[in-house]
Length: 190
Image (cartoon, helix red, strand yellow):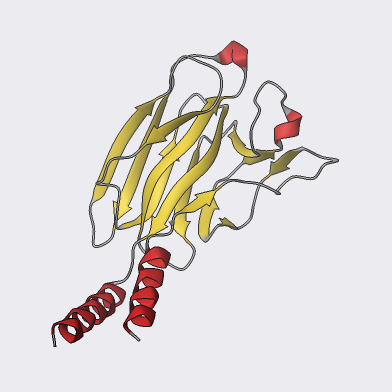
């Protein structure tokens, strides 16, 4: 019985801390690997909504010089927002970005701002490296309990991929987890 309860608690913790990765896979067709999109509503991917005015989804087969997975290419209206599609607070850990063409390689600033649950804002500016190809940019631990994240870049023509995010568990979930753990440890002592 104790083993079953412990297994259930471990399972709960692993689902609470499971990361979602937005990859943009499968949004293009083999006959049209370069897909222009102007969505009328946010695009829902891996439990998160991404809202932008104009962008392109591109299949990795479209660009032999930019290998990897499918990605989101921003070439005008250089901003987009991410929210959890169920309204839950979330954290963001990292994302990947690349210059779109080798001949346009230069350092670029990406300004990111996050709206915190209960008010307040966190901001950071990432500067890309001077090399063509995807690089991973990481957020610090202050990027949690977010209701939305806004990305902007003034020059444009960047490819984005592999956003790593986690939904933050509700206080009630954490309370139930703590109570269950307490009951197990109490039973163990008796």
